[in-house]
Image (cartoon, rainbow, N blue to C red):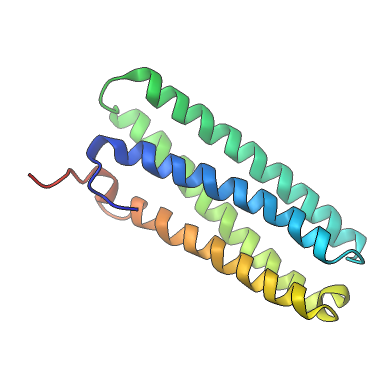
Length: 149
């Protein structure tokens, strides 16, 4: 994400978060599809992850709608709320990556499916990519940068 958007940085990071939460929800479906014999406990955890990502995406969309309707500079209070939400998305993605590592290491169904191992590794890398974008936004002053003049 580029930091030259000034006030729109808040909307841009919310757009990124919305996209990646949708991706992560879809990834839970992909894993369930490519590992049809996945253990029931892991299958259920993936369903729960999907629901959590969808709920987070809905919260993000509500913030985006709020920003678009406001038509004013983002208040420090709202900027803080957005930063907290993005922080939660970073944590959620990190927890999901940890779950994926556990799944890859402990699931017999995944271990016997080389394609699943590759796909799960790819999914984990994508979630880490999002975390990097979001952490850059959260870093000291990054979310408040103004475009160069």
